[in-house]
Length: 339
Image (tube, rainbow, N blue to C red; front, side, top):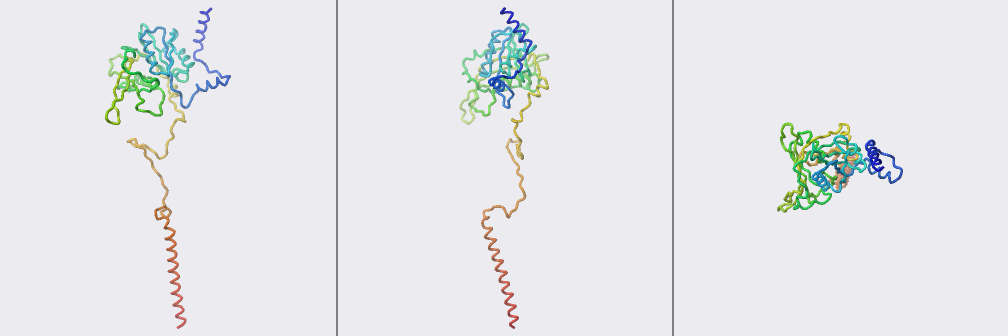
């Protein structure tokens, strides 16, 4: 009876696919749905780590190393799943990411055809946006780098992409966007130099042969700041691990309409354009002022308080001169009559 019940539940899970939204009946349920609804400023992206039907110890250890790098923004499911094949059928992954509110997933498995593979994917609106499958070789676990001091949990790393392939090759360009979205962590409003503790360096190998997929080298370093005698410290790199080489095996490109919707920016987050303010080629902020026609008689000057006195003196002088002129005219007229 137990086997029959489990088989029926598995069949129902396959048939139903992603979890559908249902209206909440309680205040707690409404708060829960509101927390998962679309927001102007989205929450930091969390990742779901999954294991396939068969996994070697190296695959499991690599998933744990990647999980440790993203703590606490991640959840790892140790159970092996036989019905999970993200590159062929993504419905199971979509359902798990929806129920746990995850925006990213990382899937590891091993098979005869692909002995060590890793899949990174992104979700948008509870559906798969894009994903890539990588073939991993020359893996060195994090446990073999014991000399380096561990990095604080939740610290943001510096992500560096080296090589012209990330701009020329279409698969590497998609890999750059996918890996950058995975390793960058939460958005920071302010950044302190001493708060940067690690760096993730991904290098693209130049000029692969004909028919060969482009190869990428993954390195993880700790940044040690030393005294340099100046304000800018000297930086020393100390490898933290893990270390491996990855090759793009298969990829799912995003649907154009869904990709356009994912790139939309809310109006509330857009900065309003300031009128008559621009930035020059040197990055300096400049502005332009428009002034009305100036009336110099009304402009305030250091001698503004003397303007009233000067006008008063001028009026008194004019009045005195007119009065003197009138007196001279009357005296002349009186003299003529007396004569």
